[in-house]
Length: 296
Image (cartoon, rainbow, N blue to C red):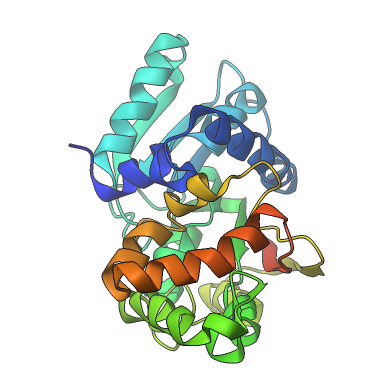
């Protein structure tokens, strides 16, 4: 049995469908490349990837640090560290990799000023004490070291997108609003809008945390989009795939939430309304994210 982080990252975020996994990971490559470009990684440097997950950024940085450089994979999931170690062994790069079991807000296993670059992608959304995490990033960086991160700004979605307003997953659910509210309540019980670390911050907080940590130079690029097509529901994603996909490691799939919140007859009614909208891609897309680069 894998822990929930590994189970989600390796299966539940794309419903266990290999083709969806391939498409999903390909969609992440531009973000990975931008994080590494912002970090200005140089040959011979040591890069710490916090929340390395399945190694998207860490493995992408290997060519940049070269044969004399080093990559530290850090994660709270031993299963994911083991997964990355196996990949590193299979690709004969394990001698340039280290694997550290540690949360983002406690990197005490690393010494002060011990790395040249710190990267993260969609990691701080799971960290309650973000200020402490930024303090740890600053501490382990050498003078002149760079922090390069990407974070979704989920508050943008929750403020403008809710079943109470008749919109669910970007679709008009007014005729089944009563059911949509109950399905959404399953998620909100697990992740309250005002207190969950995934939802209780925005881009201004990231800037403030970086400055408070001591970084002398901080740059942030914020992007928000509202589109006619639903960015969350890609065109090649079927209703069955959507049902079995989980948005993050802490929440159920849509199918699991429906089964918990609704009766069998109510599920039929909810599906009869929502499924055609999904299959015709008639939803609305809404997303926001921020890239932050800070120098010690």
